[in-house]
Length: 132
Image 1: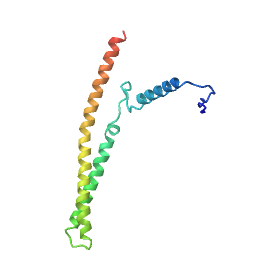
Image 2 (image 1 turned 135 degrees about the vertical axis):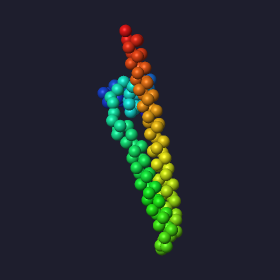
Image 3 (image 1 turned 45 degrees about the vertical axis):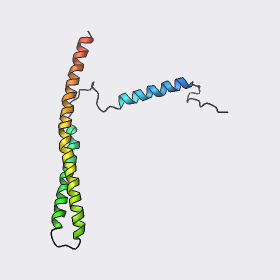
Image 4 (image 1 turned 180 degrees about the vertical axis):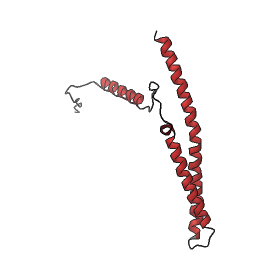
């Protein structure tokens, strides 16, 4: 025979109330998990908006340049020529991939910012007309 677990305050709750509590908590978590709300209209600096793509572009460019150096070293007569022939093109492609991803990310952020501004404008219009 199983004894139902008691709540911290000592009272017993029915399974329906437990389901309501978990569903309420889940909806609260879903709402609060958004990084930015429509209701917050604080302006952010350009660095706050674009720092991730800038970092990806910088790392991609650095890896690409290292790949170029290693690939050019494979042309010179060195002992481990096969290692340079393998690592150079791999770093070239990895750097190029990160570089392109960062460059594509910037227009996506710009488009998202424009949509957010339109959404905030429409929210303010709606609240102006419907709260009278």
